[in-house]
Image 1 (cartoon, helix red, strand yellow):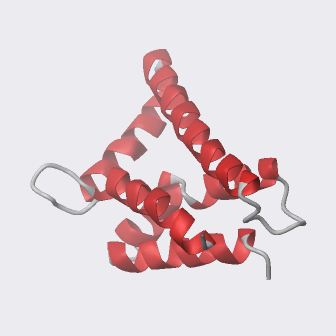
Image 2: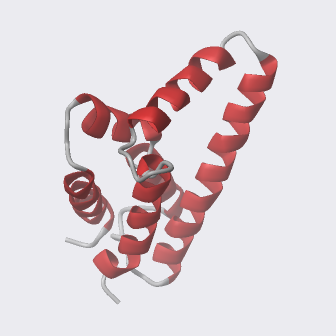
Image 3: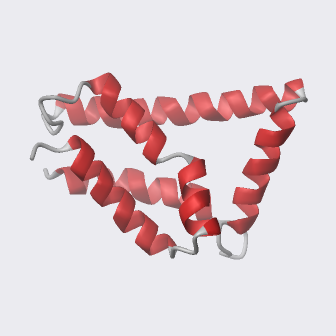
Length: 126
């Protein structure tokens, strides 16, 4: 199975989690809510705990993606599983989605294509 086919479900799920709100509107509300949570976490212990829990949950899912890629032999030989998890975690972050889609005006489909391609470029054998 190609890396692109392996990554597509994860990228699509990530995009839906960052973009879909009731009524199918774009991610503006969710991005704003995430930024509010990040800001609140600086001074509110409950918000900090919620943000930490969300980040841990996201990292665990991304570690599973990296593990799956490593076990299937889809990673470049110079990329360790832990490094792949870090790359996936950074590139699939809400902050990157916020920057490109909400702030820079990318269409969600463009973001999904870019994310898929950059993950392939970073993780797949050349």
